[in-house]
Amino acid sequence: MGNRSRVLVIALGIFFVGIAALAKFYAYPTLAVAPADQVAHTVSTGPNATFFSAKELAKKENQTLEARRTVRGDVKAAEDISKKLGRDVVVFDTAVVTANEPNYQFPDDPSDTDNMPLSFVQERVVLDAHTGEAVRWDDKETGEYITTTLNKADRQTLDNGGSDFFRGHEGLVLKFPFGTEKKEYKFWDTTTRKAFPVKFEAEDELYGLKVYKFVQEVPKQKLLQATQLQVPGKLVGEPAQAAVAVDRTYQNTRTLWIEPVTGAIIKGEEKQLASLEVDDEPRLTATEVTIAYDDATVKKNVEGAEENGVQEGGYQAKAAQLNLIGFWVPLLSLIIGLLLLGLVVALQLRTRPVVATRAKSKESS
Image (tube, rainbow, N blue to C red; front, side, top):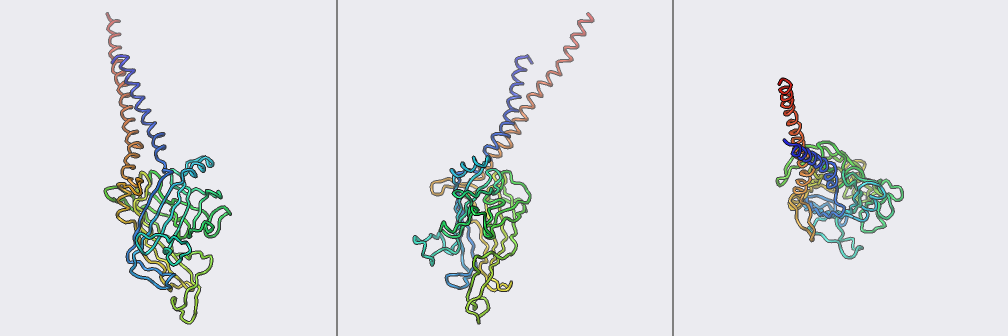
């Protein structure tokens, strides 16, 4: 190999090694970031549900519950908070509406309490853009909050230092880290407003996509009440009393199917049991349901679909792109680069004996 060819091969070898480093340490970290402008909708259904209707003061059985979640990114808030904290964060406003009728719509008149859903929870969360971990942020205008009404005055925030009902989000909230591992994490539970361990259980497959299955056990516990709930005594086995103060208990087994490259939640399922108790004795079932993402939501998360003019989901393709940039491009580029550099070294070592032999021949002659 001539000197000019040798220089060219060395340059190509260095180029491919550089490509490997660039893809691994720059391109992948740049792409492995939760999008600040993300919009997502999920629908969960729970057939054969039992719940206590506060409006009718009656136990309802064999009902189908539908929970609709909307997640919407606040780009400006994410940019502002990222600058102030000196780290990449995303800000999401979420709302979950649960009703025992499909496609429920809020009444135009907020005072129409008779037609309000069974439950409503709205939250603002600030997350690390890479890991999905909750980030504490108590700014009065853009800070995190949680509320169960549409009235802004009812939002529980950290602006006043927090309260017993809300001390800030913790753990993972809406997604898992990029490059999710087969280990234990902590995941946020909105009902208790705490994070509990969620453990890797097994690999699984949804619509041809490999996912990690995680399970979280939220142990039975009493829920805090600003004012203790009062119900007619006859409903809780105390017919002689007109009204009885009851505690509300809650427990949940939450299962999450995670696409490990992106950390996206492809499917979620919850087995909830909430009871009304008197003197630590369950007297009435408040909620008993197994509720999970419907098939259309799971398929959208895997394959992608357009909703309200916005492309959502499609994590199979997104994972393939990230895997290409973060694994295959660095690996193949490094192999090619090292092979080219190794070729030059091998040829160099091979030519040395020839040169030495010629030198000896000239001396002997």
